[in-house]
Amino acid sequence: MSCQEVRDLIPLYLYGELSFDEEERVEQHLASCAACSAERARCEKLTALLGEGEAQVSAELLARCRRDLAAALAKERRRRGFLTAARGIWQRWVVSPPMWMRPVGAVAMLTLGFFGARMLPEDSAALGPLARSSPPAVVGRVRLVDTNSSGEVRVQYEEIRPRELRGSFQDERIRRLLLAAASDPTDPGVRVESIDLLKDRTADAEVRRALINALRTDENAGVRLKALEALRPYAHDPETRQALAQALLTDKHAGVRIAAVDLLADVKEPDVAGALQQLLHQEEDQYIRQRSLKALAEMKASYGTF
Image (tube, rainbow, N blue to C red):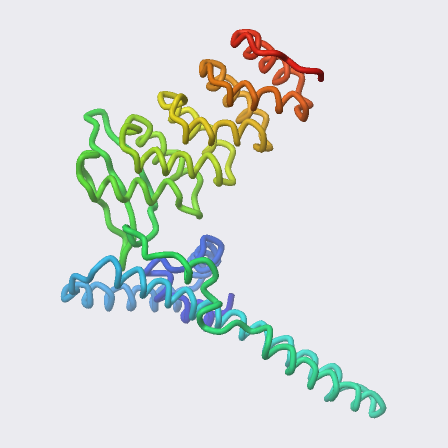
């Protein structure tokens, strides 16, 4: 990255608004550039001075500001990408080519402009799913979740700047942060640690819904396994049972399917037997097949013809 690019990103870097890849590139540049490091120090000092007079604002307002910023950044990246492509085509096909190719280049530019105007997103579309979702109860990126021997929970998170909150799970702010961290899209490690802390609070219906959502949608198999294990005490609950059956039949990770079989084996319900019978129609893993057959035998359910 050039010095100018890094200096443009330093304010976003200080407020934690860059992706992890962008943060890494900025930090690598700062480590080798004294001038940009001095600029960062100047911005940090200015940020600290501004923070002394920081006003308390609502979570909804911060959420809206972060969504607006994400939309503006996404639109700017798309615009720069389009302009870079347009400049390249102009240089190659209009400015530099032989004379006989210039009319072709002009037509290409007109075509690019026509379709480009339709491909570039409007402000509302640039947000993607964020524009359609309601403001989150907790604003900011959760960076770290852990607990000490006395049971105190520690959560490091970001709103306008990095913050840390300590307390028990009975603290509503801690609870909301843990629920938000359980679905954090950037760090599976944070999701695992959050679910590990939430697993003893499954009597809370909202916690169970968060765990079920993680089991159904999380891209990381380790997170899904952690959520599945946390749901063990509620395997008889219809909603939980449905999520376990879905994991049994659709999850791509054999370890998750094995864990789902083990949990459902203790649930003597007709819908569980039906799910196990359906599994035998499609399952190729022999261990899972044998475990399913054993569970059906324990339920005294028929195997069918497989």
